[in-house]
Image (cartoon, rainbow, N blue to C red; front, side):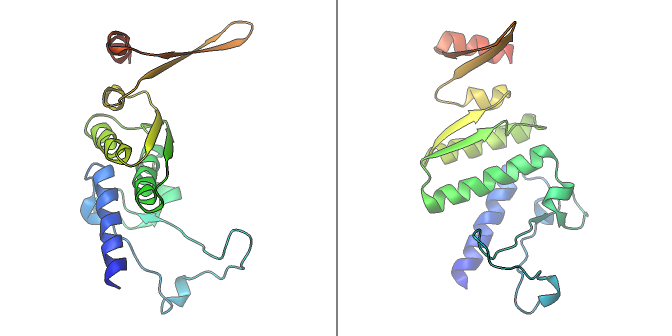
Length: 173
């Protein structure tokens, strides 16, 4: 239907933006329809439902689609999850979204694209993001610095930073 087509295009646009525009022309969302029965695996209904979904992605130009779980780096998987969580937050109105080290394996332009996507999502939901990227940290409204020390015991210190300490922390990153 037209609504499904629009949703697919929105999802595609979101993934391309979150991936920083890389390989945009190679990202394809494919339908599995009743007519493509050779591609459909029979699944028994259980407490989790009946769906069996596999995300296919091409992360580089001229590369065939392959299973996301087999070909994507940790950073690519994180960014696809950011795109999907953003879409789910739009639909489900989730109050809080947590990202734990979504910056794995990224830097520069891609870090900036991820930060901008999180800013957009923050207009809808509270974002809690654990990150080591100064680009991402610099765009946050609130900054909590967490340090861990090891002696006989492991000690964790949590500090809400003011503007001056925030600049020091960003420089340290």
